[in-house]
Length: 161
Image (cartoon, rainbow, N blue to C red):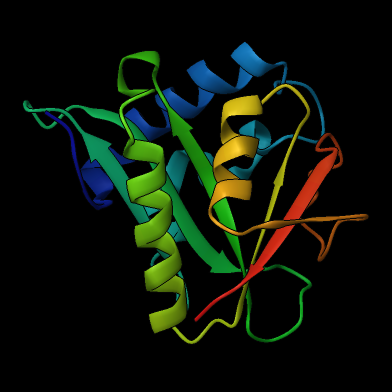
């Protein structure tokens, strides 16, 4: 049984470990990927800013097995947020958690006043890309903002209700 809740400072190390375990699985461990973002070790503080929120997925023992969040897009237009750091350990995949958490994040983003949600990913993250398209994200031809994630080669956005 998995649930999700807002991240707490006590979750920071566990979520950093999830990110550092999952990203290399998909070849996303070199320069230009989120694994190197300074916020990885301090997620609760990084998402404690106005317009941002981060949620961790936990198992029945409250062990962190994944997460996702939204925050204003760095270098983006006002009202544009970015879906960030959405990763799950293998045991949490294929159970509908990604869709449930993404829907929750989109609802929170809208409640925070964002009008558009942007995301970056890379070729090979096929399951995630299918989910993004299923939930109404459209493909963009170029990146938005200044995320520093030059390793990503797929960009998507979606208007929020």
